[in-house]
Image 1 (cartoon, helix red, strand yellow):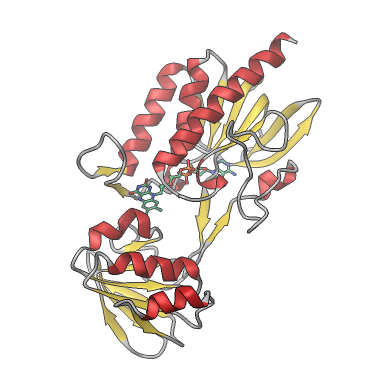
Image 2: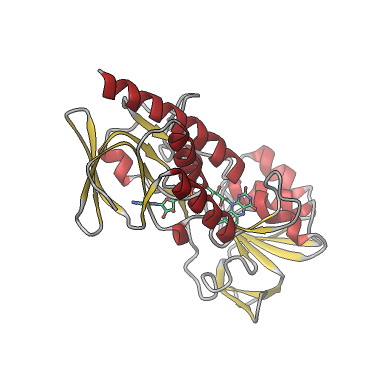
Length: 303
Ligand SMILES: Cc1cc2nc3c(=O)[nH]c(=O)nc-3n(C[C@H](O)[C@H](O)[C@H](O)COP(=O)(O)OP(=O)(O)OC[C@H]3O[C@@H](n4cnc5c(N)ncnc54)[C@H](O)[C@@H]3O)c2cc1C
C-alpha cells in the first residue's frame, strides 16, 4: 500500500472500477482502487448473459480475475471503504476506514447501488439461491417454474410482465399498486396473478427457495422470489463533492458520454449512473471513465 499523490483514484472494485483501473494502467498512469469485492453486486451472481462466456460463470471468479489482471498491470488495491471525500487545491482527498488519507488528480466513482431490501427472514440466506433483485439478469433461470415478485411500483409490474414470458406462474405481491393506467391494463391482461393488500413475511426453503409466506397468512409455493422495491444509490460521498444527480429521480449520478460529471476531474461509471444494472454497461462505462480520467490527470501533471 502506498499513499502519496495518485493520477486516478477509484472508489469501488466491482466491474466498473476494475475495468476503469485496467484502462488507467494502459495509459501508464498511477491508480489506486478502494473497496471490498464481497460488497459488489456481482459477488453472489451467476452470470449467463455476459459476452464471451458461453456457460454460466460465477461473479466471484470474474471479480477475482479482474483484480489480478489490474494488479498485474500496476493498480494498487485497498480493501477498505472510503468514508470521506473532499476537493482541495484542485485535488481529491479521500479518507478511508482506518483514517489513512489519499490524494489524487482525478477521481472515478463506481460505488454501485444498494438494492432496497425486504428485511424479512430468509432474504439474506437465499440471495443467489432463489432470491433475486434483478429480473433482467435472472428471469431466464425460471423457465417453466413458479415465481413470486414483490413491489408496488412500475419496476415490480414490468418485472412481473417480463417474468410471465418465462415462468409457469408469476405471483405479484403488493400492498397497493402505484402505476400508470396503461401499465395496469397490461398487467390485467397478462397471466400474472396479483395478490393485493399483502406483503412478504418470510422466505422458506432448504438449499433453495421453496415457498413464500405472506402477511395475510397464505403461503405461495415458488422456486424464486424477485424483490423489486427500486434502488437506493450509495450517494453520500458523491453528494459531498457537489455532484449533480439525474433530474428524474435524484438517485443516480449524471454523466456525459465521456463519463464526466459536472465536477472537473470527477468521473462516474457503472450502476451508480443508472440502469441497466448490467456488467456489460459497467465495464463499458468503466473503460471510458478510466481512459478519460488518466488523460485528464496527465494533462494536469504537465501544466
Ligand atoms: C444477485 C445478482 C445477480 C446479478 N446477475 C447479473 C447478471 O447475470 N448479468 C449482469 O450483467 N449483471 C448482473 N447483476 C448486476 C451486476 O452485478 C451489476 O450491474 C454490476 O456489478 C455493477 O457493477 P459496478 O461496478 O457498477 O458496481 P458493483 O459491482 O456493485 O461494485 C460497487 C463496489 O463499490 C464498493 N463501494 C461502495 N461504497 C464504497 C465506499 N464508500 N468505499 C469504497 N468502496 C465502496 C462496493 O464495495 C463494491 O465493491 C447481478 C446483480 C445481483 C445483485
